[in-house]
Length: 492
Image (cartoon, one colour):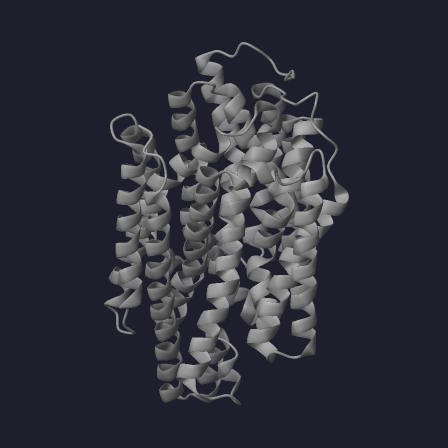
């Protein structure tokens, strides 16, 4: 096996290359959660249905997750630097379309294309980190810096969205991607070496379509069940998603070069790490939606006003992402991960006790900050465990496997916890025939239109109860993750 790349690379050039990799990653991370800040504005302007509202939120995330295995393998074949350049151009074009969309469907389609492009950028970037930083300690530090950018991007997204929405229309959250990706296309060829595998297999299109169909089928069935009940279409879509998932797994077992390396998944240590990544991302992704809606629609803050309450989360996220690799030089791996997961649990406990009153603002901010701190320190270590176990010729696919657990978890959290929250909200509100029962955005709008302060109070209380349930679910999931990490090797 040979890797086509520029060697050797000086320490200074490696650091500059790492910064170049971080730029598009920052934007991809921001786009994962920036919709949460813009969602109320989009809902008021385009008036999407409840199902369309959820698709606007998570179509990007599910296309990232569903496409990442294929795009990671494609990057191994055509070159990781080239893949970044191609997909940066696609990302910018789709962002421009989304900025001027006039219908919910066009927003969903633009976000979906952005998701496919974003799915290629991250595994290509992460595999290049493995090529540039070959020593274990330096790779963990580089991964920590990279994850700092990624996690900080997710954390700063509400603040970026709030600033843009305070001065421009909601389309500006899309349009900001264009100049950033243009800069990426200008600097990447000059700063990054090309890296590809001469033995990388062809991307299996059938496997790609099967995996994407399975993910989207299961998601659609869940959304349909929450919004319209368990009718025939929901059951048929669920069955279709399950069948495609089974066919995908069976096909991977037969292929000489599978899209999903089941040998890595069957490895107990890697499998537990992937499960931990998925579950922690699930609760972080789902809770971020509730966090922003709580500040804007329950506490009555503007997008910019809500963004100020995310500053503690941003600061601690950045600090923690560098703290994890630093601690890794002094403490055992498992000790760090478990300690940080306990801190994250404290954040979700605060979510579980949030009230409707103003005191909920600092409590929510503290909860988000604690959760971000714990996850920010644990993530680089968990990601590196998977990537370091991948053969060099499959670096892109291995990075994709680690990242797909993260992205799929975020997307699943938006859908699963979003759907759970909708069920709790409607049950607590107990107004099945009212427009307010669709979502909290509709509830706030209906209460304002009717001038009914009691309805407004009930809507806010119902959503807060839903957020409390999400907090309890987060605590339960983190207990499961702690059990998983206890069985990991305690590598120093």
